[in-house]
Amino acid sequence: MIYKLLARAEWAEAEARGWYEGSAVDRQDGFVHLSSGEQVVETAARHFAGQADLVLLTVDPDRLDDALRWEPSRGGLLFPHLYGPLPVNAVLSATPLPAGVSVPEAVAALLG
Image 1 (cartoon, rainbow, N blue to C red):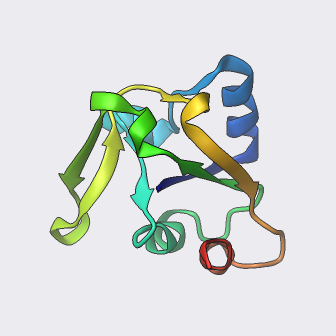
Image 2 (image 1 turned 45 degrees about the vertical axis):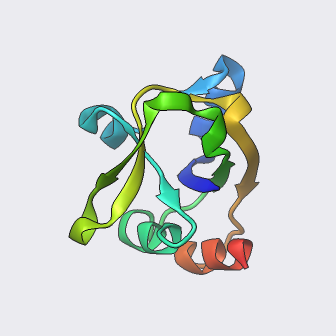
Image 3 (image 1 turned 30 degrees about the vertical axis):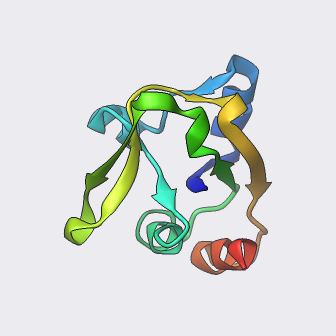
């Protein structure tokens, strides 16, 4: 599985539309940034610390076809990048992060 952190409001919009077009940073970079299970806690710490009202999406990579590419990023690690919108039907779960817990800790707890 691969993962995406985003604002709860963004996810609500995506559910209504049927797809997620990505955050402002995603659209600027030309792809939707995703993370593997090994990467998502660090992603949470680097890019989402201190934010609230977040949702962790669990995405089935097999439902993304050729638009999903694993490309080098931080320190040469391969990250999943989606070149196109994320279809809602590729999302297996959308779990709101609990309030009062740091984002990285909440993500780590959800992934066990």
